[in-house]
Image 1: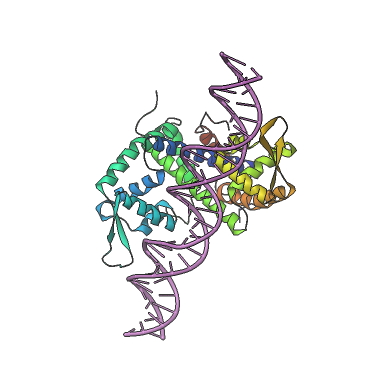
Image 2: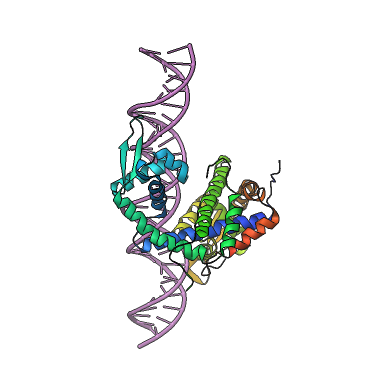
Length: 152
Length: 152
DNA sequence: TCGATGTTGATGCAGTTGCATTTATATAGA
DNA sequence: TCTATATAAATGCAACTGCATCAACATCGA
């Protein structure tokens, strides 16, 4: 029982910074993608996981675990990705309910083009502002804020 | 010209942590409010700014600067807050286009009840996980990531 | 084997967001 | 003064999100 009802001033400041900075960074990264005529960040997250998964692909519920998106969100996002030809849905042999999602060549290409822009955003917005040690320190501190209930 | 096209591994890790942790924290805080039958975080942000502004109130464009919400977003959020009786819109003497937004007694009360829940979330999710020094360190690091173009 | 329960993924509907545009007023410059 | 431009705020429309529920299949226990 270490929880307090009222947060300390330090906690409030850190929270406020975190909220504000993360919003700004997301917005900047989204804007950069938009300006290049590329799809939004959410698409990247999914394409990234699928690219890492390789030919075996992933089940939608695995994407939910990895990306933390809501189930209905993934369902519709995958529908859009499929409509764009970036992923394909395959039936699963031993489970008639499910499907396996696999990234297509076009999907890999889109991911690559997105990374060219997204990666530059990360380099500019974060890499260019803090030293490697500072970045490690920040990762460590943020890591301690992770929800233990969520694998990560 | 210190920008690089490809971010360092440290930058990528820090970015990923920041994205993931901030999403989790927002979601947890939103859930706590929802469970208490209270309005979403965005309402708190606006009510908070208006409460700080006092009787003089704020113009919508000032709220946009402070909260970083989009113009149309503020416009509609204020319409909802007004419909709920949490704020009132007053004409501005020397500018016929504009209006001044002032928080009502009911608005203050709602903000108070939201803070009881929101503050506990902050205390639990952040205050309880890091020491005061660590929180200060994190605020300082995050502060260096702020967009210089945005007052803050 | 069969029914109860659990899991996977989709979807109808209402509410919200994003984009572009509009309306109304203010300000600056000829 | 009168027109052109800028600023404040609202809004129509399409896309997206959240919620609840559903349909389809799987699994477990009697």
